Length: 306
Ligand code: MN
Image (cartoon, rainbow, N blue to C red; front, side, top):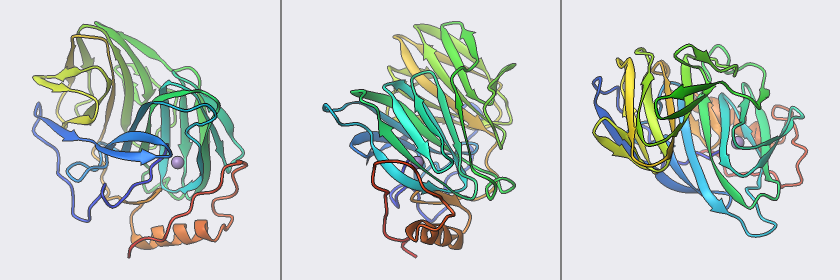
């Protein structure tokens, strides 16, 4: 469920900067395949690479597996990022090189912090359906070389909206704050919206994105559907969302990430040398990433193109 990033996602040239307050920029997601599941990759895109520290957004499914099949992503490495896993349907078993073994179900949050290096696998558990997201958060330079960690949050705070319910995955919506670890000033909220208008209070220092998972959500006059990301630059203190039929969406935001990130495969770094070193350590199976107690085969790929 976690990547990988390909050269079709992130070119060498810089992406676009913030838009004017109130302007809605819509970016089309790119379809990719992760395991056997079709994903809509909303970030990174050529025109928009990060929103706050959010640097990767995969909307997975909805998918139906044949009997005995599942997501089944074998052990693979990460550095310099947090993986945020959030399901709308199905179940996935997370195993990592820290010894964590954690099923995740809808309404729960898995948050893995890679730091200098971690490896994990994502296994099916027999659930025939899968629908969810996996997001990456770029770690800032003061923690990205630190210890890896894993946390599971079975309960998250909720906020009743005018026409729906918000669940705060990370950061805060108004005065309601998630207990999840946060290394930068960013926010992630699940929006379960019924017909009508819901108004969300925003932090005006944040830029934001709305990613629709089911249904359709009007952001201002712009209707947003699955397969698109609506970007809003900093300077907004509230956002009205209009919905005609029940819809599900994510609100992602944060202070624009101050560093240029370099992403390749499952690594988030700053320089090519850092990625080259990480990939050599994975390929050589050094103890930088450790072992994942999974029956699935580890995933390897040829080295970076430079
Ligand atoms: Mn992963």
